[in-house]
Length: 150
Image 1 (cartoon, rainbow, N blue to C red):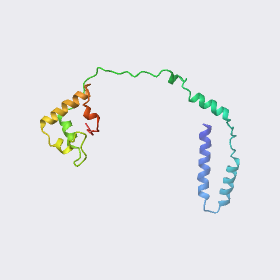
Image 2 (spheres, rainbow, N blue to C red):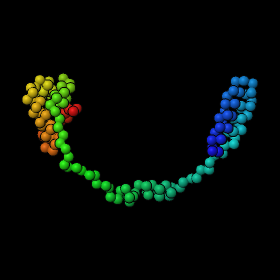
Image 3 (cartoon, rainbow, N blue to C red):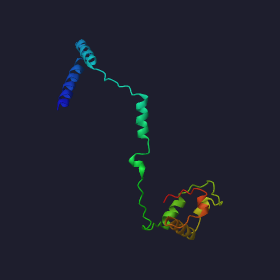
Image 4 (cartoon, rainbow, N blue to C red):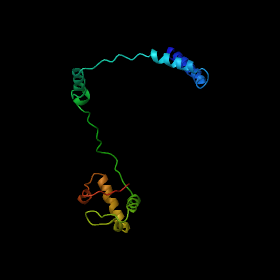
């Protein structure tokens, strides 16, 4: 409540000063500014010694804090529902590959995969679905990056 009143008084005084600026009462404005800046006192600064800094940071950075004692084990739900991607999503992702780019380690270009038949897309879909649901990823896929945005 006191703070609100102080703010109101300051706002009123600032509005009054704004009306004086550029007019005949410039001396009043400067007198007010001078008196308000002279009244401000700087807060005393306590110098922190090096020992206090060392103590503070050694406590802060120690691994004896409770959050570092025993990290919580995340719950892993191994048995969840299976994830399936349909053939249309795989086909859309393959068709979004850019032409004229370097081929992967097997020497297969994106243009060749794009011109593949429905059987190719069905086989890729089956492989992706198996990988998403726990089967091993083909070794060739681990050697390069395939940007499939599904």
